[in-house]
Amino acid sequence: MSEPMTMSTQDLREKVLDAIKMVYDPEIPVDIYELGLIYEINVYPVNNVYLLMTLTSPACPSAEAIPSEVEQRIKEIPGINDVKVEVTFDPPYTQDMMSEVAKLELGFL
Image 1 (cartoon, rainbow, N blue to C red):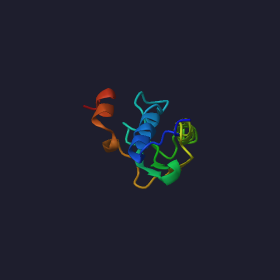
Image 2 (cartoon, helix red, strand yellow):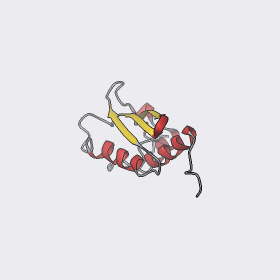
Image 3 (cartoon, rainbow, N blue to C red):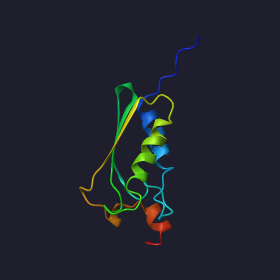
């Protein structure tokens, strides 16, 4: 029998990042990571993931859907134990938080 594959925290963080990049705001053709909506990603021992994120506005029509899709995508990663997604509006989101990729995609550059 082979040993179960153990992933380093860094490998797991990369997989979490890949999962996050599959989530889009339905109104914007750019993933939420490039939009700058992810404030913090922590991978703790025993493969628990904590993610702090924001939304483009508190009145965002997808306010419920986006965080739950993020949580679901992360939970699909083999080896993940528990996922906590917290939404904050402090600091408030601004377009300055977008990556250059997002700004280019949306025509801001």
